[in-house]
Length: 163
Image 1 (tube, one colour):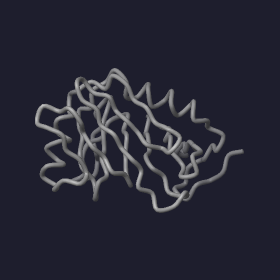
Image 2 (cartoon, rainbow, N blue to C red):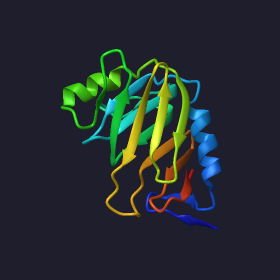
Image 3 (cartoon, rainbow, N blue to C red):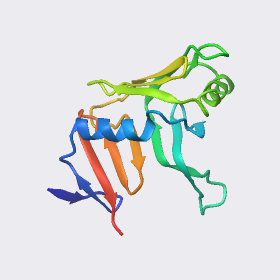
């Protein structure tokens, strides 16, 4: 049954891991992010697909498909400028993330613990969740009008904005 979320969207709690896996693969595999940026702390944002212009001054444009990974420890392995990750200083993290721009993701995987791996051309990026409780999400995939969000208990839900 659908329910209303606090953001004013309809939540479909019956979405399976298989549905999210297929959506994640469709959004990311075989595609190259045109923007990758560091958020607060160790959060990372990947923009894929068509560029959608922001109407809010000072807010970055976003991709029609967007992957937000937060509450995680991450590491980029095998990049031309060397390995780097969330334990490094901010400048090193930003340099590492820029190396992902324009690189095709050949494969994306997540496991039962919600850890995520992106396999780029000749490198890979791993995200190990750092959630403080099982009620926290680990990452969110935005696709068009649907938001596929990973719930902390290992379940998935989809939120569709009301129009």
